[in-house]
Image (tube, rainbow, N blue to C red):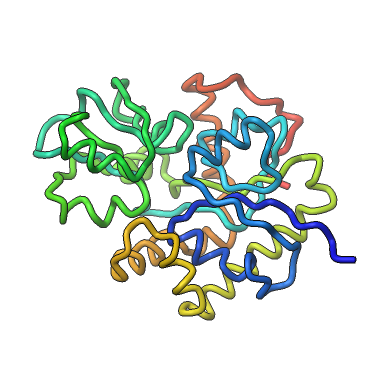
Length: 269
């Protein structure tokens, strides 16, 4: 009898569909997974309710989940030059009403590097239009927004990844794969290995996932999808920088986003 499948939450963005295509389609050894695809804030909320078995989550959200989830090393998103950016219709100071892609996202936490602002939470793919229509004064863009804002006539005000790198002296950890602690003893090693194998398969066979990536991408331009993948799928997708992850969790605690976690609970499986 086949082993039951594990629900695996990840985003529809090209970096995730590219990296996890092989795992989802059984092209590498590992647990059988049933994909559950949504935007990162929805995945954070699902994990916060304890509904996810294995899921991508924002590093900034992990403190809310630490009692139930432990992180895997493979499959995450991190690096240099990968941070969210703040845009507006024209050059101005960062301020006013700022659209963010969810209260629990790493992007929202990084905004605190510049100060405290009035924020308006919405889906990441609605932010550019909200800025263009004047519904908000500035927008905090993630994912494809980094590659599309100029063509839409928006002006770059700040790159929060650069601010993080200069202040913290480490790569920016955006997200990681989390597994429920009750499942981790039996499943975490195999899942971590399967995620890494899926990433390696993607690097070795970059065209294999082309249709899968295109079917789920918000921005259909092939060049945008390719640039997105090149930026966000990197050596840190193979294995996260644990020091950087712990630094962000500690900073989120300092910012009082959530109570300090139990030090007896390990962060990584």
